[in-house]
Image 1 (cartoon, rainbow, N blue to C red):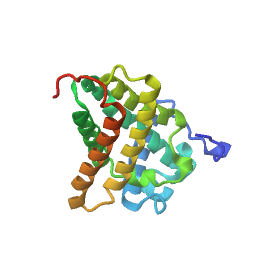
Image 2: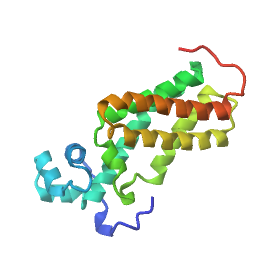
Image 3: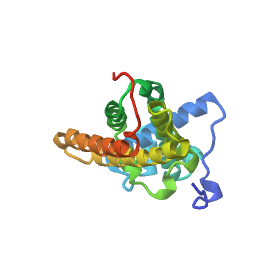
Length: 213
């Protein structure tokens, strides 16, 4: 992501000591809680500082703007999201397409339920997005999962499919918490059907799968 939208003063301060890292973690936790409750637009730096039990000056020391702390939180979410899928890169070798899709979607649901600020973050302004390099990590992670399940798949094709998968997952993340609880599982099933149909159209003509677990 281009950083041209930020002024030089908007670059967050990088904590150099463990104490500073703990302060930043606490500030991000507070931002997560406030954004989850109020949404991005209504969230304020004062509310974040109050939730963290920190002076407003301490918050601005590390994050000069709401956009800046929101981007930091989105980067942290992207790291956690990527880590969630690492084990699936190994397990995918023993899954058929239907079970692979089930795991992809259910892991996503687990993540969004554990991170209620996620829908609001996805609605935040474009300037708060994680850097392109981080988004590329996620595309590559999904591509790696697909290559584990289909070793003969061309790498460029796997990366395109990983990109599509990432956007399908992102849409589910954004929609899931907006729905009434009784409708959520129904929409999850719809997304499973959608992703399975896409995978089948792209790779199911290839031969032979291994053990389904």
